[in-house]
Image (cartoon, rainbow, N blue to C red; front, side):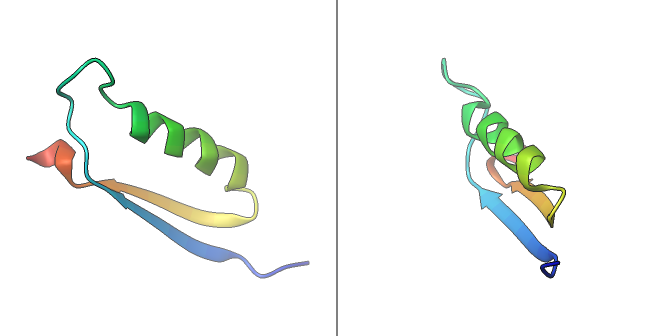
Length: 49
């Protein structure tokens, strides 16, 4: 059994534009598939600006 990894994604995107949230949801899909083996956090800096 492999050791769990702590993975943190820090992305810079905002909700302006036709592709709003695209990167965030892509990372969320990836993290959902990896969460059983790893501890994953997603921090979207641009969302708060």
